[in-house]
Each structure stands twice: as structure tokens, then as C-alpha cells.
Image (cartoon, helix red, strand yellow):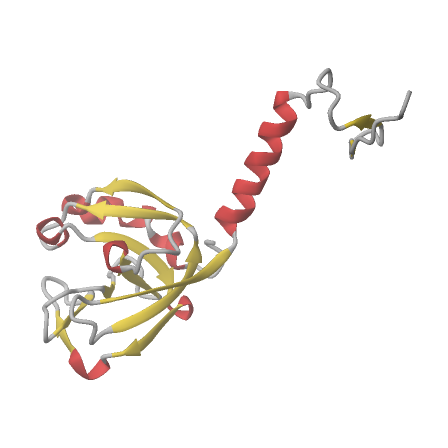
Length: 177
């Protein structure tokens, strides 16, 4: 009787060798799930470069952020009207690539937030938020497709800004990643 050639599966945790085609062996489900969760967590925490910009393409930028983004949709008087989806990053993770000469500044109320719009198409793809003066809020809807794996969005009650602003303060911290 000829010996059949078969691949060998080595179980890393125990060092036990089993034939790969041994259908009696199934790794424990918790082991597979645990490995998948750990891989997802590593992907969630590692950063990559996302690019984005305004509608006409005059203003372009890039940011360093995870593939799995956590955003906030605010209901204040300006954000609610334009459906702005906030992705707040430290200022050091934002780079304006083109269009500085096309930007127009708008402020209102306390004049602490600096809203920057493209003079050509009117899109606000990023701004300096009052809640995070050391950061930049990028409109996640203005990111180019391809690098975003997922977006988890949470509502932010901007109509009661003074009561809730503290909940966003950590997002522009260099250690917030």
C-alpha cells in the first residue's frame, strides 16, 4: 500500500502535528474568533494615509487615521444643515496639499471655530473646531474612496454645545489614536 502524501498542519499553541486533511480536527471556535478580533483591533489602531478634498478638486488634503473611522454627526445650526460628518484628528495628522489660495474663512457666534470653504465649489471639507482648537475636523464625506474600511458614526448634541464639548476634547490628542 502506497503512503499518501498529505500536508501537515502544526498547531502553534501545542506544537502537535496533524494531517491537514484530518477532518476530525477543528480549531476551537473561540480560537478563530479571538484571532480575528485581534487582527481587527490591530487594523483599527494602525494608521494609514487618507486623501480627500472639495468637489471641484481645487482643495486637497491628506490625513493620517485608522482604516476604521469613528466620526460624529453634529446637530448644531451649521453642521446639521450641511450634514457634516466630523472626523477630528490632531493638527499634526493633517496636511493641506493644494488650494490654500482657494479657501475662504467663515466664523460666527464665538468666532473661535474657523470654517474653511472652497471659493470655487463652496464645499467645506475641513475646519478648525471650537471644541478642538489643537485639531482639525475633516468631513468624512469628503474623503476619497478606497482607504476607509468602515465608519462608526455617533451623534453629537451641538445644540447644547457647552454641556457636551468636553466629550470631543480627547479626539485631537496625539494619543487619541
